[in-house]
Image 1 (cartoon, rainbow, N blue to C red):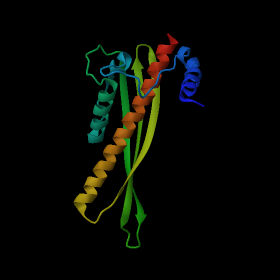
Image 2 (cartoon, rainbow, N blue to C red; image 1 turned 120 degrees about the vertical axis):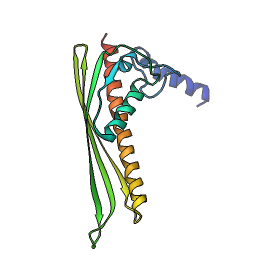
Image 3 (cartoon, one colour; image 1 turned 30 degrees about the horizontal axis):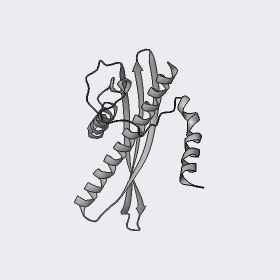
Image 4 (cartoon, one colour; image 1 turned 135 degrees about the vertical axis):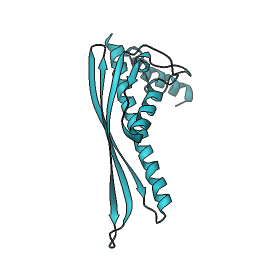
Length: 167
């Protein structure tokens, strides 16, 4: 089959998606484009250092341009991180640890109330050097926080798209 026929077949296969409201979630945005519904979400303060990192990551994802809009919704997030040691040796030392991170959130305002949650696990090797072990744990915690921020952002993006389609 020639390349021109393949192109035509691909276009015909994608044609039904044009009228169904399909929008790519990950791409298709030009630089500087943002969702005003997500940008109008105020993230309430989350306790502890990891909470501050999650709050900052969420604010950056929800409002990437930093535009000033009136607050329409409030996002309240509850964060829990638990470290578990794995790979226990005979001398009771551990060679690997993991960070179990979970976040539950509530989005409220404008007559709506949406709740959701997300979980992730980030693991790291325990080194004999205390500094290396500390840095590895800090990196694992930051990766877990970033994963949670991505998951919450994705869930809120889907909610926002559903609101747009429902109109």
